[in-house]
Image (cartoon, rainbow, N blue to C red; front, top):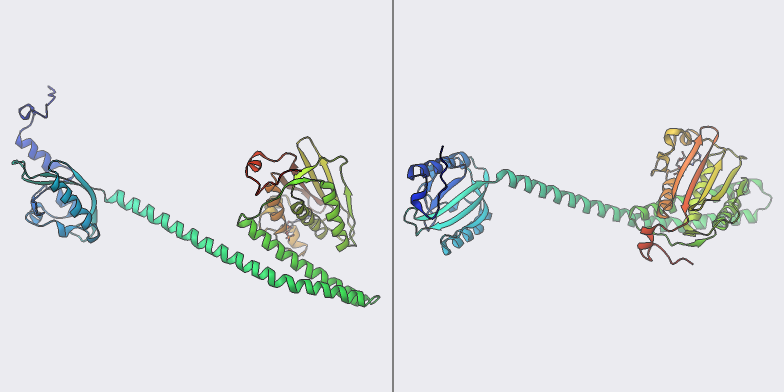
Length: 398
Ligand code: ADP
């Protein structure tokens, strides 16, 4: 078959006649309308039935403006006006038109003023159905908006929770300090009275436990709000550990906490206050989860790139499948719960967050019934990304 390359400038070179043009319009997949200047329909191709539910006859002679969605009318009017003002120049917009069944169909409309063309004598509008695409993109936009609303609500709740916790912390801490202080006074003023001493000791340690719980909740809230920052300085890790353990020994005189600290431990870039918290939580756990009288040992060691703290106990131990989950918030091990030791599952998640902020790692090794070892490894060099994070996170090293 011969292939003819038509020259659009030369009508007679076109391989089709009027019949073929009619056939093309009749079988076009898009609606083609020809409108008068005042928007009455002079011509409609058959696909209008399939796309909008009207036969061409039902559309002919009708003003098409009332078919538009009220919200889209200004857009449609502006497009028709632009087309009318510039003959031969296409104007385009996207509008909703009413289907005969009452639903709205999205159409991408291109209008060209061919009023001056005697073969056409009107504004030619081609309408391409884009309902599916528009509905999908509107649904995606709505989903995004819903997600944003949910995020804002989540943020509002988190803020309300933080506000409540801070208020609660303040309201609890003052009376707790008074309770512990008065218990101390009672103990001092009743020397030799065994029962009174014991009661005062219980009051003090319970007040301490509650104060620690409040501190943990407040700290966790700051971690959740990504407000927790660390101020690194070069610290003598052994000294920080010795001080912390000294304070813990004073609180629990019955327990033997042994220190085995490496000589010539290099200075560690760390936040002393936060490291004290890590040691307090780990040693506190070692004491709580091992029987009275059992030894708790804290060791330090170092390699060229990092230092390691180990807190070792001979307590109840942790089942192998709980070794990872105990570092998650509010998670307790089966052995801990079975032993009837009260706890909240907050301490280790705080330890993990603090160690992570230092660029270090923490893990537990254990054998049920034989004891546990908690290991913290801290880098001797500040990780590059932290150093780049600015003075907010990293204080100038001394
Ligand atoms: P808490 O002790 O208040 O429950 P933690 O987050 O400090 O919270 O500990 C989580 C869980 O890990 C504990 O509930 C306990 O089951 C287990 N655990 C922690 N330290 C030890 C330990 N030294 N020996 C045995 N189990 C431990």
